Image (tube, rainbow, N blue to C red; front, side):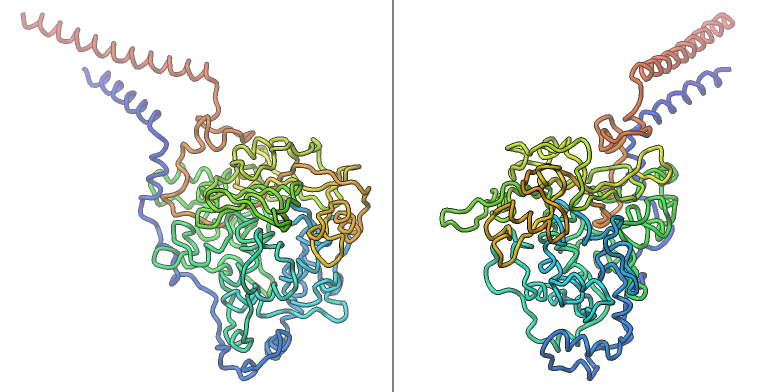
Length: 588
């Protein structure tokens, strides 16, 4: 007779306990359950290999006077290499890549670093001779026609740029190309510049691309190591599994190289931040930063073999994998830049020479050629709704509304922390951002790095300025620090009008995050997002349990639940009491 009430009470108590349990349990169990397949490792992944030992080829025995002779030796066998490469983004610096027969020039819809403005080194057209020092042709540095494979002479390809495994050739070639030191170095370097003394040794060492050879360009993009990408720097050449579980060596990691995900066909390397959407699985990544999506290896139900996996898998259609599995950027020794204030350049030291200021940790906070700077380690990515469609701006574009204001005196202080910088730039317009919102089925919550910059604009119409940085002429910025002359020369090089007056504006830009994937046990816990003050607190749209809700309704529900529990307990107590009372009367 008493089983019914007690069973109902017990069921209600268990239900309440489950409803109020910490959501951390779901995340913790996800990393403890047995996998349904062996973990990826260097032995289970098909890494790029070569069927040729280049050290045995007589054509590569040397000696070689210059890189052109090395390339000719390479092309004696790989004779279709140039025509394949001439149509790729690595050669054209344009997206979509222009074909060799009909290169697209002057098209306002083109993307790629030849065409877009940014908050780092601002723009390419006005600094072609410096920027192209790291171009894969290795020649014709100051000739815009080098990007056109139909031009004469046809720009060759530099095989060593990608296939010399240590990456030292690309770094040495960049220095010999004549680029100004300040293009990469915040502080004047001491000692000799890198060089490759024996080209024959370099030629005989060639093979598939490596993390070091790819990283010689991509780890040092837009101003030095780790400056642009918070998830790409030299720490990935030989990382610990805690930094990147894919790139770490076995047995702790999977032993990936860049080409494991960025697969190549006819020298066209898959993966572009200009194409793809987080929802386009399995052959596209969360922000198109890699050729193979996470789902391509891990399926659309990656948590199915672990406890509470079904609950975690329900996030897949709304949350990019990187959101949980890249909890922080620049987690290694190399920091990433978060502020670049161009308006503050030109201050000289007591000796009237360029100088730098550093904080107590040794980070450079001011450079004569670059202005106020700030960098940070171990920073949380910013979470956005993204459908993978980049909205960029070009030199000459007017800043979007709301129009940026002149930078406040302290808004570019290199000593500011990230929170202070974000507050100072809270209303700054975006010069590169991703479209998407919660109502868009193609959008996912995805991580990005946000860069904060103070850049020059045309004072009359607030158009983004193109700037000439270096060279022997007096109009180069780093020669005389004369903004009007430097912008005038830069706008002329970019074939853009200029009023003659320069102002400065605060801007922000988004940079996708796809690397530095942490082990499962370091993934975000549920409460990191499912809380009123969690990582999604400022993300508009969607319904996030524990972040969203109506307090009065919540209190009403809890009150009703508490009253139900109390009534059940009272009812049970009464039943027990009356049962004992009547049992005693029957015995009496």
